[in-house]
Amino acid sequence: MSEIENSYSTSALAETRNPSRISSEKLAYWYFRLNGFLTIENFVVHPDRGTQQCTDIDLLAVRFPHRAELLEVPMEDDKRLILEPQKIRIILAEVKIGRIELNKAWTNPSRKNIQRMLRAVGAIEQERVEDVSDEIYTNRWYEEPNYVISMCCLGRTKNQDLLKRYPKMPQLTWEEVLSFVHQRFKIYHQQKRQHGQWDKTGQTLWKYAKKYSGENEFCTNILEILKERNQP
Image (tube, rainbow, N blue to C red; front, side, top):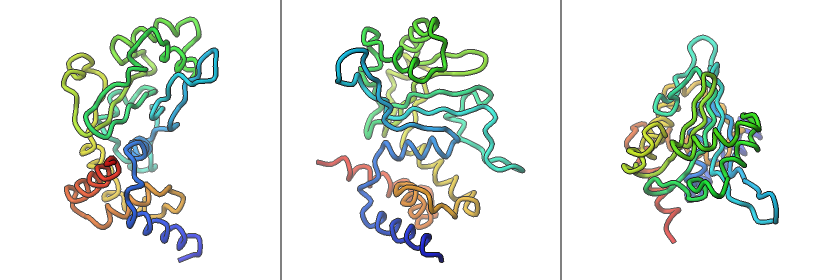
């Protein structure tokens, strides 16, 4: 093992001994990353005037329709998330440690945060921003032939009220997220085993997936880490 690889291995081992560093936001980041999304964490929305930021998006994620990891037999991404694989996907992810909820900063049209987000991302022509924003505020989902822009919520339990009001908006529980992560690492162990560049959360998830070959054990232990982190 090289000196660099050894340093990463030592860092990952230390992380498993101090697992409270895993946050729900970082877990969401790795889920989107493993599904082929390009991501920006804590995407800040700035006001037109003043110095105080309007809000931030836990995770802004973009996935392109021709994404394929591996040339011969591409990895299969999570169908619970990739609802329109033939389209560009732009996702505003809301991350909660417990029950799924929507941040009021993204549900109040008078704040115009969706408009600011769309302008910052640049996927919509300026003259169409208001109409697209109205659609997202109403349905948490906007779709055209070439792309989809939507909210996506992650948390411990699903919100049935939000499911009824916004049936197209994806809701994913941590059990579903961890199930995918475990399967990805198990099925593609050979391809993923060289990962010295991964951050501490990625290293820790890998170590736990290797330690707990059973999906239920893996999920239970990572959920316990999230619970411990959330305790005062």
